[in-house]
Image (cartoon, rainbow, N blue to C red; front, side):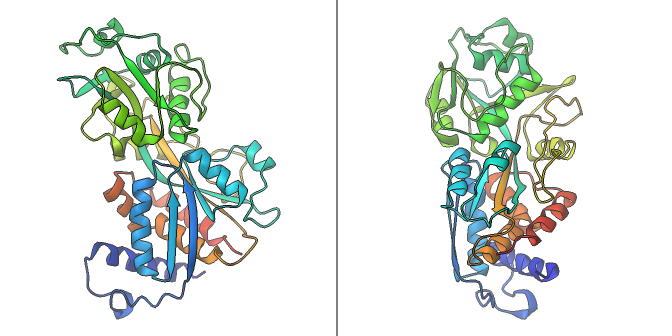
Length: 362
């Protein structure tokens, strides 16, 4: 694929989607894109990507009217399973496949012995959200957050919470901690933070499935937000784009408390290395959850777009390649930032992602 030609098409998609110009690249009218792509693309997975996928799909289909993209935000675990089973052309997942999963996996739509392309194209902070009358924000350190979700800190006026919130009148009220009921990449990222940053308070290793019974469970990011919002004294974790009017926690990093933001989330990703021992197009990141770098928010979700490097059939390989190229582009990343509050990837990550995307064939 000619890379400069692909990026020109990407720019046209963004212009059509945002209606910023009545003219397209090479003086074509909007709607007369000249696209020859035609087909039906199926994806499933991360609910955190849901709002971003809506923005991406709308822009991409505007530029390619012969293509329909269908994305089911059923959860990261469901997306990975769907991709393995061959029921989807691509997947969204809030974690990359483990190396064991890659070795054991037989990915249904991939050619035999094909590598899997995993691209960290959706970056977002995970917000610790709560519902307390008259309190919009709190400062919490990792050990306190872990103690709350482990069930060891059970009341809002606990000394551990009071110690980092001087001047805040905390209620004598029981805490109800809400977690995901489904296999969730958001849960895996959240528990990875708890285990890395507060190992004495959180004994369980990172996992997409909540590690013990207790508290209250809800389906998906929207379910957690709805459950927290409908209660008083509730606390949960969710993609920050869903936090809405709920109270949110600033997290201790070094000597300061950092509130979530796209910029703070992007900072921790750029400060973290890629995982070793993976294929060239597998850009799995090893997030540094214990960093003390100023301005970094460590409870971050890095969500991946997953595809075959080589598809068993060429039917949708070109559409997958073009769709991922749009998502990785500056225009696609800005569309997600506007529609979902995510953090655009850096130029260096975009360069690596585009190289991996160009390797996709069928």
